[in-house]
Amino acid sequence: MEQRAHFHKKLEELKMQVLRMAALSEKAVYNSIKSYLEYNSDLAEDVIMGDIEINDLENAIDRFNLELLALDQPMAKDLRSIVGAMRITMNLERLGDEAVNLAHRALFLSTRPPLPYNQKMEQLTETSKKMLASALKSFVEEDVKLAEQVCAMDNEADELSLKILKQYINDMVTESRIVERGVHAIMAARHLERVGDLATNVAETVIFIVEGENVKHRCRG
Image 1 (tube, one colour):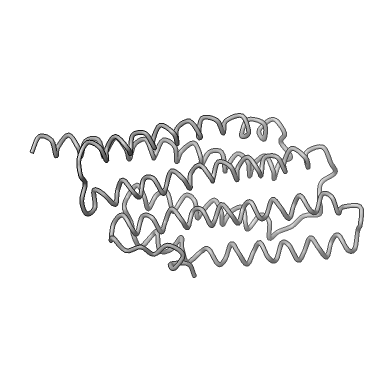
Image 2 (image 1 turned 60 degrees about the horizontal axis):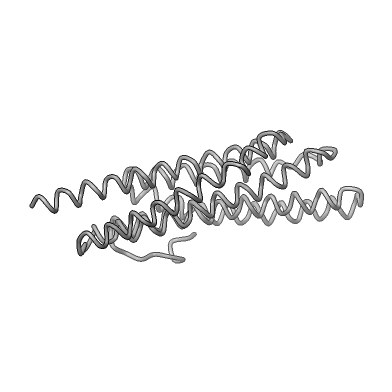
């Protein structure tokens, strides 16, 4: 009994470590978006420099997971919690990478004249942020319904990214001087779309942890 209590205390510690990493990744994504929208090179550089902390924390959580598996032979939800934590930290690390990628786009564009206003780009930033915040909240609260809502939003992010691609291509055909900047903007939209994809991965993992149902790649739309 005492051993089980110790194990569950370790599980809670694991969740706190994942939440700490989630906070860092979410902050990186938000700041990269802000740096992109505001042409803020200093903030973009902060995002890039901060990625090492996210990577280090992922490694620490991986080691902790292995210790938990060695400590006991977890079954059912306990095992799903450990496997789920491994999946989520992997996606959080990738979110940090996408934040860095977007920050690099922001750095490039911060030294060039602004591109024509693109309403769909602002919509995509808001959608991506909402998906990420909701996915992380669903993990904290083990809220399957909220996780399913994140999954359903993935198509919206994909459609916005496609509309942005089409609009910037039209702009570049009309005005050849913006081609280089337009390509970076299209790639920025792709990074934002990936944020939505990774948030969906987190949401799918929450469903797996709570219900034991592996909905990977199936809960979208």
